[in-house]
Image 1 (tube, helix red, strand yellow):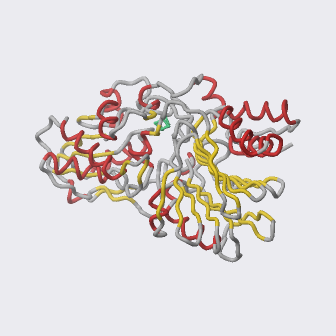
Image 2 (cartoon, protein in one colour):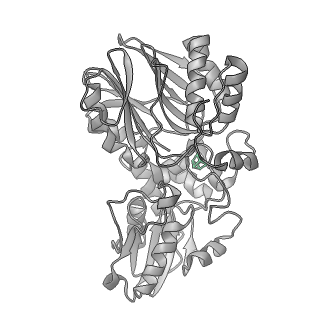
Image 3 (spheres, protein in one colour):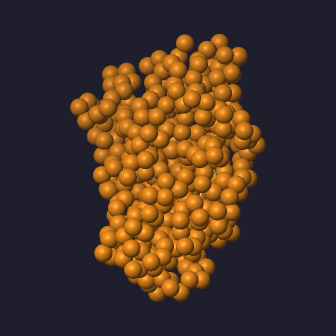
Length: 443
Ligand code: SF4
């Protein structure tokens, strides 16, 4: 997952810098920009120092290629630049097509690099409409793309609609961003880019749309549960309201009477925890404290995931029976650290409540859990997971409870069910994305 954004208009360099803090929760491995300056596309770590009317920004959270370094925006031949959010699950097919159809030989295990080369070649050889249509036909995966090609700005959202993408304007220019909340901070009116559509913007302000194939929509359910800011909207639905409904659904399942207090795992479980607590007539106590200065744990590279980000308020938990609410359990890293601390501080009981179903299958559409073996719930019963966590009880939502809380059925729930929106060979995909995650440069 990544945050992507762009601005077309006077002061673009300042606008992209202002947008960065509102999208950095989608990628903490680095923020970088590309701006057009005197007909050149220049990659920058700080866009404030230059002047430009077209800039792209990128906050990286890697799901392919190496961890911890900033590879986007990708700039090719000084006439093409790309930022991308998602995962191209068939990127090796692009590498093969590049060699077969265009005579370009790249050796990479970084999906965005294969995408950038492939997209540029399609546009150069096929033209804008046919090139974009062929891109839609070839790509499998979740992708929201902002690209510059010659004097055009091109904005693309995949046909399934896995990842969010919005476009807005404020009278002085046009902005594009992964999340609506970012554009609202600039006081912009915004609308969502529809799945399977590409917007082509000329520097002159002229715009037109290219329509791709119509397939079954598959909006990422985990975006609602965990990833998006709560003040964002996704497919016209308020993320805040979804999280409240998820918490209320959890409350309807509550069978334990002996609960003294409700504690959220900060930050993303708070809204569900508040709704759950008020529905069962208890109050929320912030007894698990997150170090706010170390970022989001789940999207950290593996080498940093062992970092201890949570402490507990000893005096507030001693002797208490606690309902501990989390939004999701992927690897179980957070709860495996927090539960022993609650026990050591004298908690009488810890009942874990999760505002989503068990995650048992990998994601190849934009979240960084591409193997079954890393998932705490894969191949396990709920009671097995409870034992691994050391909880007194464990309750998840069902997939039906999730979809009715979101309020639509056009969702991807593959990580809960194993039912992927397109054909995918899990064994091969796991090998592809975990081969070594080391980027090899262009030959
Ligand atoms: S598999 Fe899960 S995380 Fe991946 S796109 Fe589908 S719902 Fe989202």
